[in-house]
Length: 55
Image 1: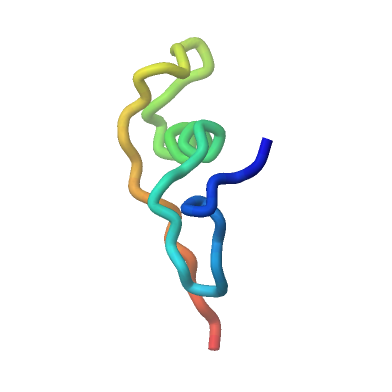
Image 2 (image 1 turned 180 degrees about the horizontal axis):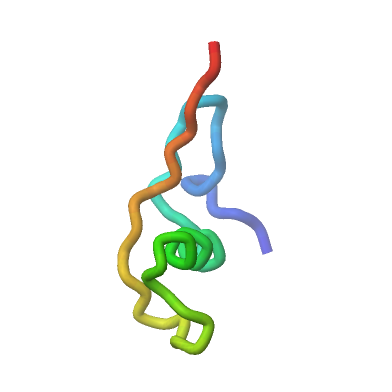
C-alpha cells in the first residue's frame, strides 16, 4: 500500500498535519493521557509533531 501524497514530507521544514495512530499513542503515553488497557479507538486529538531545524 502506498502513502498518500499529502502525507509525504517534501523537503526539510514541512510540518505534517496528520499523525499515524502509533505516533499519537506514543505522544499520549508520554503525556499520561492513555493507558495500555484502554481501546485505541476514539483517541483524543493531539498537536502535530514539530520539527526543529538546525542551521
